[in-house]
Image (cartoon, rainbow, N blue to C red):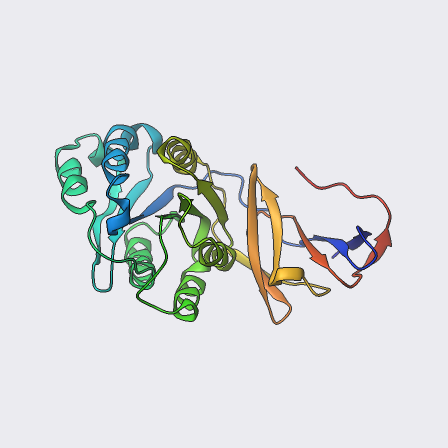
Amino acid sequence: MKTTSYAISKDLCLVRQEVPVAQAKKMEAKISHILVVDCSGSMYGELPRIREQLKRKLPKTLAEGDVLSIVWFSGKGEFGTLLEAEPVATLKDLTTVNTMIDRWLKPMCLTGFLQPIQEVDALMGRIQQKHPGHVTSLFFVSDGHDNCSNRAEILKAVEGVAGGLAAATFVEYGYYADRPLLTAMAEKAGGSLIFARDFDTYSPAFEAAMQKKLVGGKKVEIQVPGDPVGGFVYAMQDGDLLTFAVEDGKARVSEGVTTVYSVSPTQAGTLTDSYEVDA
């Protein structure tokens, strides 16, 4: 495993670490998309447009063979799965799907992240039994702050599902979402955090996530040298910036990631003067 440090200031180094993992399978995988939508009261102005986008775009954005699940949530005890592993063929007959979206994706009460993440965990287990060849892509959107559970419980739940995710996207919707918590959730899941100031910036991010092709679903554990600032490493993959939490000197990175980076106050590996970040 080759590790190189680049001095970026007197007290900091950029650490570049090659990941010695087997190449991901080249054949594109069929995807189980899990969409988790915040239906708290503060989303009342956005949910009508999100509902309409889902009804208009889903049959066009999902690939043949993919399946879709939608989890809604609000406050404690207010969550559920409104669609479970629906195939594209079913989505083309949208009468039932549209009825479910209109019925359940409505603004309700408070904001609780823990139970919908636990629901995702259970949902992933059920889907894997029905569709063992699929990999899982999680898309989580919220405009608020969790006011039902503590941060440690939420992050532990995210860590519990992370190993089964091939991709994860967390959307900070608007200017009042809990950026630190959503950032930490993205790091635990080995995914990306997107800021969407409004529906116009959210819409293309959602469509891009639904159309992304995936080639692997496993997470690989690596040793992380140095002392990463912030407790995470990052990687670029298919134009996305992915972050992975580091605990006890280890990180679990997505299959297919070949290089990770971190900022450290200590040198790791060979020290050099010039650097080049992979695109």
